[in-house]
Length: 238
Image 1 (tube, one colour):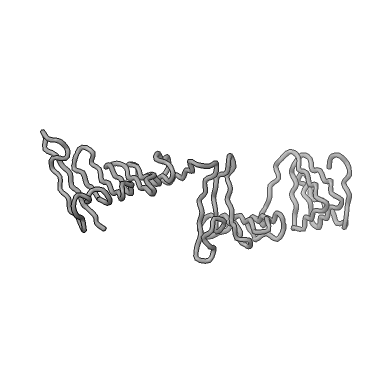
Image 2 (image 1 turned 60 degrees about the vertical axis):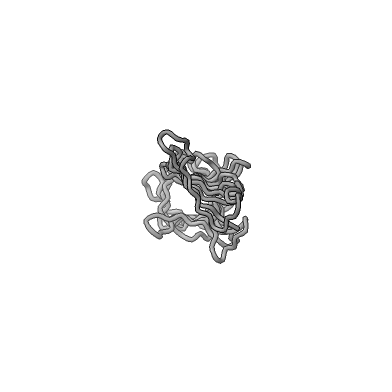
């Protein structure tokens, strides 16, 4: 086994290789240049090349750095500091491209998540759709702002919570403004159990079997006390 360090230069009137030096470790005979070398060229190329068995490993030309495996370029760092994985022309600080399929993945794993392809957290592009996925069967997806404050949670059951850990399909711990022209409550049962329910839309359609309202309802700025256990709104418009 051996390695060679090669230096190349040139005189103003000479060829590029008329000033050349090699430092070889374990090199014998004429084989020093064929298996492994690290070459620095001080010429118009301004390049640094490292290859092994005629397979590129690293190539630098003064503005861009290329990293190879299997003699195929895998990562590029351009003159703007943009990093491309799978692309030679990164357009953002980190640009990941899969040239061989219609999917592109970013995967995060740690010491207890496992390292398999289906482990950890994944952000991926599949066809025209974008996915954010937590593969842990009991893991949540949490959205935070202003430090460590959970603003929205999607738990492993598919429940969505805004301002709270959800205990039902949609759990909101905050005021809700319904400003649409029409609000359709089509579930079989719904419960308004807060202190005040403010309904300011033009039309409210209640098509469920039972509506349970245990509070005052503000309809057009006039408080209405509905204290019956059940009531049925079966008309077209309420």
